[in-house]
Image (cartoon, rainbow, N blue to C red; front, side, top):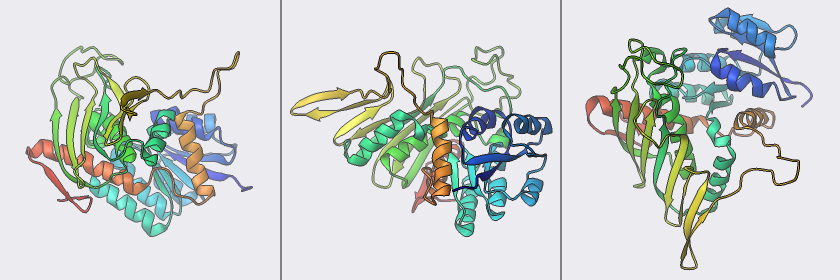
Amino acid sequence: MDQKLKIGIIGCGGIANGKHMPSLAKLENVEMVAFCDIEVARAEKAAQDYGVQGSRVYEDYRELLDKESLDVVHICTPNNSHAEITVASLEAGMHVMCEKPMAKTAAEAREMLAAAERTGKKLTIGYQSRYRSDSEYLKKACERGDLGEIYMAKARALRRRAVPTWGVFLDEEKQGGGPLIDIGTHALDLTLWMMDNYRPKYVVGTVYHKLNKRENAANAWGPWDPKKFQVEDSAFGFIVMENGATIILESSWALNTLFPGEARTILHGTEGGADMEDGLRINGEEFGRLYTKNPSLDTGGVAFYDGKTESAADREARLWIESIINDTPPLVLPEQAMIVTEILEAIYRSARSGEPVYFKDGRMLI
């Protein structure tokens, strides 16, 4: 492909600067030509740092979609605007990479999937944990059947004290929730993908506001403002799949624990198990003996050469763009991400009602 794909960035805040734009800038077959943010100064700074000469800046995404002839947009806005902007971008004829979670609600996620199917444009969601070297290795082992039937798993996203105090993270209206929808979503996506199981039967959830109203609390980014901390500090889910498999989801920004860990999965199968607690470990039984395997995932080992590994963010961007150029499915399919959003909403609903939330044919019953 001689012509470069033209990309627009909608939302030029933390995740755009921390992941999307730096990774796209390393690719030779794309160019970022349009930038949009409700704070125009951020869009101007992004255009200066990452845009081609003559790139344009917008305050309203609608104006960007109307005036620009783009191939791709990356949506890096608060959760409550994901669906609206994604649907509009797809209908404007653009492929869409939307940051996780897919949407604030299951209904919005369904609208996004329907728009992608209706327009024939590609839609993917920013679950970059799938692109880590340990995740890729474990996925291959699962696909080969090394673990057999995976019937029990844990999806772990636990922070001891790491509440994000900037942006809209603590705003329930804009985000839809706290650690469950922010980091729990990564762990759940990773676990479902490893199991290749997207058929939930019912979900039970608990959500806690136990630490979020404390003044001057210890925190990685400084004390949070209890008046602004509207979302949960921790949330947990018990998920039973149609085939009887069980998933326990754990998420927290603030929890009294000495066992933190984000975007991790623990898998238990008929032939073996795996975890990401101390690097990637795969366990099983062979020749009447138990074994634990610790794959080496670095590329070093040669004197004066540490090896060069592609970051998960860079690999995510490259493979996404290659899926467009080669017209192949993206690694993260929107129908998979939709089920993640459905389960997250079911956990919140169950926590409010005190009752299980049931699914039929993979969809949450209203």
